[in-house]
Image (cartoon, rainbow, N blue to C red; front, side):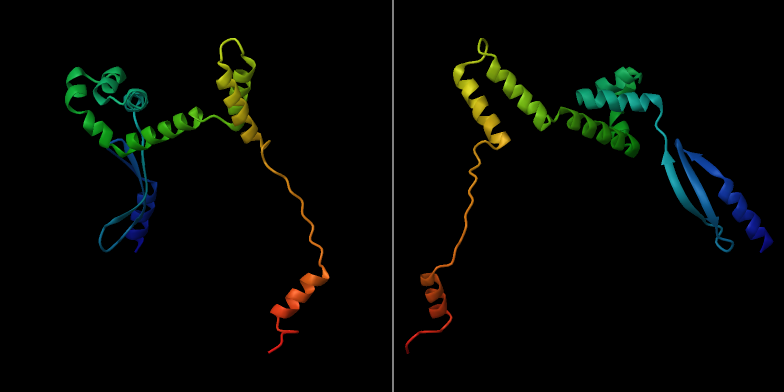
Length: 171
């Protein structure tokens, strides 16, 4: 039992480096000798990060690998290995999402662009300016019809309701 406790303590403190991944071990079984892996965190090296960044910009694996510092031969024949790397895939996904978010205009930015088009009479055709005004009015709710209605009961309405409910109907 004491041997198991020492093994367990040692296993908790050990991190194994395997293919640039740190694996945290939390528990060891006395009977089977198996370890329970609690954490697997892989760290990309600088070349892999640069490859991912160039790949997001160009979409070309071989070109991105060459720019990141890989050899011509590696870039020509083995970039698919880089693209299958889970950590690189996740980093590419993160970068792509950030890029997409930064490209989306906010409502204020769209309104500012339309306002600039409306004011620029020398470079924008009158028909385009009119469309910009129309679009801006739709965005700001200028065309929304605001209706206020008030319902007041009348004697005729009460009679109709009474008939529908069954009162006053002749059979």
